Length: 110
Length: 118
Image 1 (cartoon, rainbow over the protein chains, first blue to last red):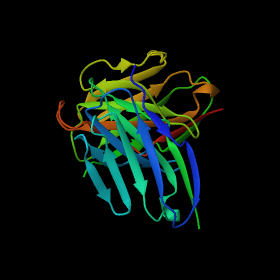
Image 2: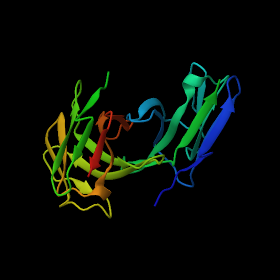
Image 3: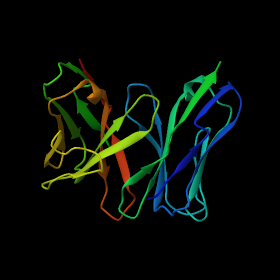
Image 4: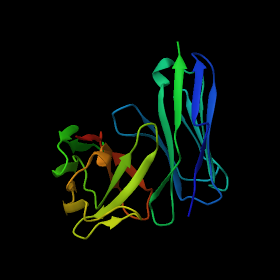
């Protein structure tokens, strides 16, 4: 059974600080997706990374896929209160099902 | 775009009744749809994978007779919670896969349905 360990599970920081969320596995994924979810809503796709070593940027968010496609990170620069939410990573396994991380609850304090 | 809708967004029902939740892909055809359950402050738990025109594949521990899934068309899947009990209260989310199998596996999610069973 493939597992995707996401850390930290909870993070509360001040506006303007930087942060990084990690997703790690011992298994290889064909792709990995990052989602953001707000209370009472479904997850919203932020990015999909496919190639080992790939780096994608979405404004102040930087996503990286590990060279071996076993891990990924999300880095937020100068966090803002609007970044508050639950961040989820999900890796696509060999059967094209998503393996989910436990989620990171992020709170940005003004 | 890739928009997925769910209906209803919330429902309250009495114990013992059945509730149907609809999931629609509005601007694309989805050969595969997924149903998830999410408990407060937790990640998503896959319940079943629904392929158009065939029986759904249920994850271990999910009762197929209790959670009936129908995927009658390329844009619609339904989840019926039969004889609902308070422990079935949860946030149910569907997703639809856009793209050809073997390409990037991207799922697009509906807004979720909050079910409360009294």
